[in-house]
Length: 291
Image (tube, rainbow, N blue to C red; front, side, top):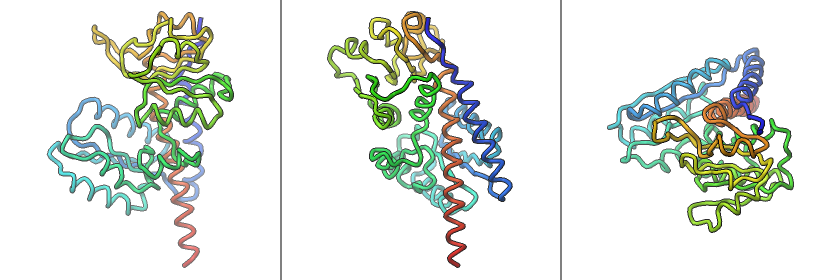
């Protein structure tokens, strides 16, 4: 029987550490600030934004939610980002995805100052990640690394398999595992003998977005299995990429859905916003010192 990795507890530990550091900053007159922009009326996006604002309140951050209608133009959105880039009270800027189809996501992400890109989606921060020099790490992959760390399993030297090659999870996930000296394979829809490749993984991370895709024959005995998927089955019940009941008896450690990776994403967003606030405070102090 696998040990269930409690994402809620690990996320709570991260947020407690962030809150403690925020208290220290408050004594210096610094309050980390996060601005979240949401365009349109997507119900799931509204829930995510509400949860982010709630997390800011929990750790002692200032948060500002900017809600714009579906018909908002790209130019209007870029103007909002430009104004937030210039504000001293805003350390992090996040644009909730997906955006309406008439808005170019790449242009919007590229407009966010790299110093305030707490999602770590900008080309600058992606490049920093690639060379092992990332200040802000993509929130979901960084959260997965915290979950793996909580198991006590060393990544170094392990055979690590990531299913999925998205820019948001799959690719950065592989980079973070590689940076900790894991031997990494990225699998995707064109991978041949997928089950065989996955069954050799000491650490298996699934971010494919298909309900119950990972079955017991794809899992090595005693493996660490991290399920990034948030899906709904035919009955409408939330489930992950991993067939939990089938895989759990075989795995060494496994994350549930919900309650696994999900809570970690927002916890790591808080961590990135804290880092941004510290860096921005140091930069401001340096400038005032020059004067």
